Length: 311
Image (cartoon, rainbow, N blue to C red):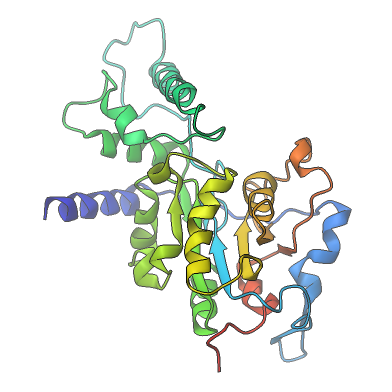
């Protein structure tokens, strides 16, 4: 009962404190991405309906679709989980040498670094639990839990709102018979975004519970292959092949490289200029191409063939 009450309170905070963020598609993409854009795969009939012209193409055998969250299903100022931002509360000592923002940011960076240094023995891409970090923050107001402080900090720094077409995309894919999952760099509050904006958590919306992996639970973040493999083990246990899985995300390193590195197909979501991460200077992304570039999430159901249970 207490857990439910706390969750309800946190969901209400998301609804109250969230700020709308504009979604602006990029004007252009690197030339090598052009043949893979969904706008080229889908043609518009005179009546305005969309007709798939690549059902027999490389994505014709997809059966499972896994999503990133930040910058993909939800617009994100940071394109991922936030790490820095403006202060939440006035400093208790106005004449302090450091500003309140600097105190928060310095504390958070130091705490994350300390935990990462310990975890590097296990993974090159460690993840922390932010509620634990803020619970130990000495300047945290006594009436706030570490979880609430962490959520308020995130909402202030990295406002998120549903990506246009996201819910309709999810519903359409489910209607077609695809199994849906999530592999995401996330914190405890991330699943609450679904309930705050759409009135239901991912499982209630229709995502397959076994096909969900959040970084904070497993202590490792994308593009760590082990985070993807947690879900892929479940995918194989249900009789699907890894190359029947399509991963959708906004980041060429974390999402496209991460997915293709473990044998999945990968779609780059390029519908939001501020969250799109091409990573052109990263050697892991050199000469890397996605299997699909999605201009709008509403395009995705038209770019894959019918799901295994459709019709």
